[in-house]
Amino acid sequence: MRKFIALGLVYAIVQILIMTNLISGYFQATLVTIGINIILAVSLNLITGFTGQFSLGHAGFMSVGAYVCAIVTMRMPTIPGFILGVVLGAVAAAILGFLVGLPTLRLRGDYLAIATLGMSEIIRIIFLNLEITNGAAGLIGIPQFINWTWLFIFTVGIVLLLSNFVKSAHGRACISIREDEIAAESMGVDTIRYKVIAFIIGAACAGIAGAIYASYFYYLEPNLFGFLKSVDVLVIVVLGGLGSLSGSMLAAILLALISTYLQSFPEIRMVLYSLILIVIMIFRPQGLMGSREISLSVFSKLGNNKLWDRFKSQKGGH
Amino acid sequence: MLEIRNMDVHYGMIHALKDVSFEVHRGEIVVLIGANGAGKTTTLRTISGLQRPTNGQVILNGVDITNVSAQERVKMGISHVPEGRRVFPGMTVLENLELGAYLRRDRDGILEDLEMVYERFPILRDRRKQTAGTLSGGEQQMLAIGRALMSRPEILFLDEPSMGLAPILVQEIFDIIQSINKSGTTILLVEQNANMALQVADRAYVMETGSIVLSGTGSELMSSDEIKKAYLGG
Image (cartoon, rainbow over all chains, first blue to last red; front, side, top):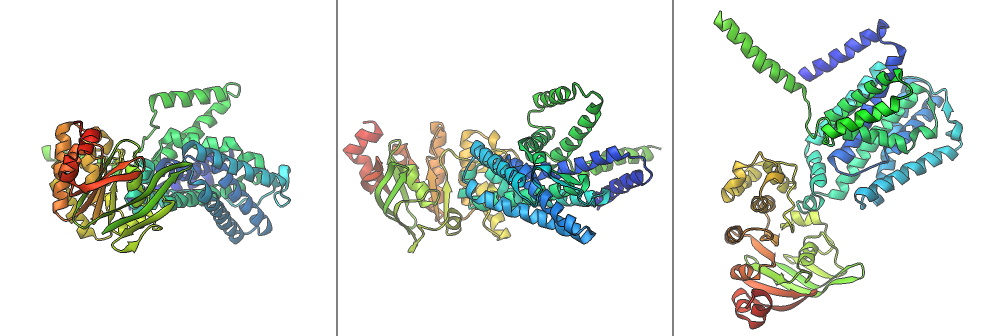
């Protein structure tokens, strides 16, 4: 309950700030980027952090969601069309995740990373050569439906969905695969099935992130979804902590703020950005959060026990 | 209850198991001994479904399970403690044990068995909230065995439970294996420590380069000159 009140407050405050124009258009774009990066990072964390499958294909899944949603909404520029676009984008990405998953999940570690990287490059080349995606020129003028409300619904929805998933018996099965695949198999965990499930869910979420991207920035070209996009997401996941959803969220927010702030130093921006990453990884090699989670109950516990006790004892003392 | 018929396994070009046949009866402790590379671990992995045979059959309680997946075999009552313990290092002791009962849905039965495992290994109760990676080798072995018991198996496979343990702990582990057997679980044990293994074995098979070369009761093999020379050091 407390969780939902806190979320509602965050939503309301930002919504009011946007309506009163206290948040500029530029900062709103940063907010959307943060939301997209949170979705990408938590979903990659499910695949890489929780299930332990090193994937470099997230940009590929994202691009499928983006293009499908763009193509659908350009033909049906209405709210139902937009929702249909997001759903179809997620489904298309999930099917791709399944198709890629089955043959490649017999691979491990570096080999899987190379195979998923190859997959994502193949998708990029396909989009570069298709007529419906308008090749290298890309799609321009995609109807814009994403606003703070939609962004908030999708981001919070996906984070809640994934956090419930990793806490369930299914999530435990995924973690056991990361911890020791052979032991997991001899405990009766269907390892292939859970690896495929992780890829399907992760890919579907990445597809939704792509759909949000397409619908906010109203411009798509295949080269937005190159190898570096996958690496960007991986950086967020590793920085936040493999196996920590709140770590991914924290890192997504932090990196977006850092790169926004660094806009004021354009010449040395990437140098500073890299230096910050290096320093964080030296001092927190396990990532900002390790594999722990922040939960709102921590705050309420702090609030309840310490402050409340002090308050009560003071009252009692008088 | 378990029967292996004419089993062959290949790793690529390497012929790892050649026409292996043996059987395990209900309530027995059966031991496979042999030098490194004789095919003992491959045999266990094939019976528990982690490795596909190129030829031959695995029969459990009269049912041919050669093409049944590893997780289905767990449901059918096979539990495998893999070589090198393989606990889940980042999870707590309790979480490891819970994963042992992964396929079960009977809450009360699971809690009962958890209590049984704690009774058998009191140290695991003390350390239930500790991550498994921080346990000592002996404790990890106990956890691996306890975790395997959590699926309430009919037959338990143990792959080199004495590996890397101090002699006093080896004795303790073997005592535990015998007591698990007495409470009704059939045991198939793979060991390098032939001396210890033959002492607890009802029957034993000796493997050499992928084939079974000798079999007999534990005491027969212990007194065999060949075995003494090859495995028992004198």
